[in-house]
Length: 328
Image 1 (cartoon, rainbow, N blue to C red):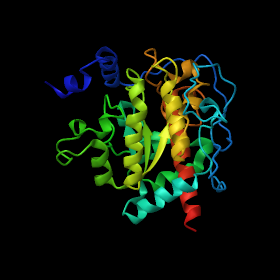
Image 2 (cartoon, one colour):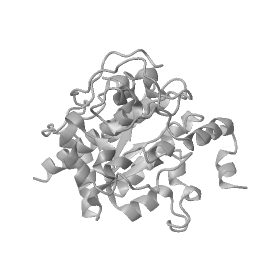
Image 3 (cartoon, rainbow, N blue to C red):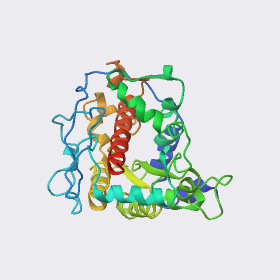
Image 4 (cartoon, one colour):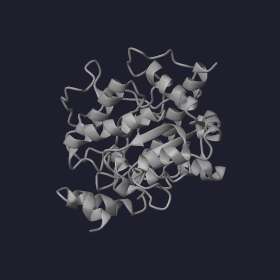
């Protein structure tokens, strides 16, 4: 029995097979039907342990009123603020998050390295890849200050992570069957392999689309990913997803609730995608619309991929400033 059959056995085969096939296709540019809101500054994610916000070099994306996407009443969701109303980019990190980061440095993790953790949309060369290439592949426009964070984390943007691959779920990351057999040790999970080889101080964790066939399993599996990352001194930065494949946004609500519970930074990408045509999704409702990373081009910024890459850079920028302010 092949690895794919082992993983897909027992339900959800058709759903995940479609996603796996779609992941193999290049991104499809679309003709936008509306102009999204401009990118401006955000309020901080509420947290009892949040540290004062360090000076920021870049603004964060705006949020405007959005139509309901099927709110969940999960008992673990933050009570004070709905996850849908949390900012796209946090303006500071909690004391707990900074403690995880600092302990990782003491364990030998690299302050100038981060890992991309997730499914096919984290493996692609259109996710942050350009920022490790020639500068003519991207232009920052009004976000020129982000070149500093690009320079600092050089080498992580274009790296193909061992913890990101087609079909990955939260469970896949902790299963040795999914690991690269040439680069990983025997019985080593993809996540353990990536952390051992790359030694990142942070991880951008973007999961959930492939978990939508069994959303009731997602929280327990995601906890394993979070807790293993913390154990290794790698600060997990959790991201919501643009799609609602599961139908009730249960997975995004869970991601936000886990970020709140573990006092971790949340990259609320779902909120950034809501102002885009078709919420930044292709016709399959799962994959993001594509355009080059030229942030000054209004037409480009009506597609999801440059918005995803811009907001990822902004999250890293806030992280960089937050940990630097701690070490002064």
